[in-house]
Image (cartoon, rainbow, N blue to C red):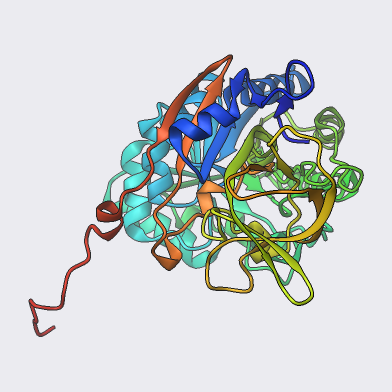
Length: 425
């Protein structure tokens, strides 16, 4: 369930982290992404407690929510960053995350991105292909630097999650098979500017079963042991992320973070190097909500449509993954329950948040909350249909701060111009 809660006697406005959401929406407008700093800190503390006693570095998966304010909070909690682009590198550094606590993942790193990461002094590259490994060697040699790297091994484990966010099966684009990784370790002398001394595995996102984690951890730990017995140093094992959250009460049963940590401890019991974990969604998803207002109720021939001022460009997950998000009107009044298709104003049938959802009757102007949007909400937003990006706010103990102001029309068009300066390439 999301971090929001009703506070005070029945009929009071909904509050999140001590802030009146209706008053906040009136002040900042809608659509509005809201995230609770207190909820983020609670999750961070829970994770630290689960990992206590391990030589473990938490590298927050920046793609889940890359707002600089969120990253600064992660830095305050002592976490590093798992990045997949130069843009995420720059955000992490601006937020105060120490370069040595940054790992660079992803299958498509460019020479420029690698050079920028080396210049920043990041801790480690998670290498996904032989071509990338050779490129890392070349760029590091040209810069007269040494890059520390881990091989991303594809453990061929089915995480049981949505096909579009599964990353650990042999058919996925991520990582290499163990035999290929072994060859890289054997060839280390050919790449003197790369210290290849780590393994990395990540099986997917929104994983709700502990068994795939156990399987992946055992495989990567077993492979590390085989390498060590052959004389290859493995100083670091990156166990990835993927912990799921509860989007739908009674349906999604997340893995307990303490059980996840126990499975990691058990699998890595013979390993004395550093462990890295890369949680993203689990840290931020349930801390966030999207506030939106009802534009109108449209009565179709067969269905009743609740049209909101938020759209798929503000929250893509339902359109992209058919994902479920709890939806709660915040009008604070007892009303009969009505079945709606909850939709946005974008000109796509896919601009639908829910189909056949039973809700208390809504009217034009009512404030509605879409829950569990702290991950892959604002981070996947776009300006499709020329809709400016929504504002974002962070809440903490009765206070709020705007952490991204609402994009203006002129800002949205910045960089565009008529085709007047014609040139020949």
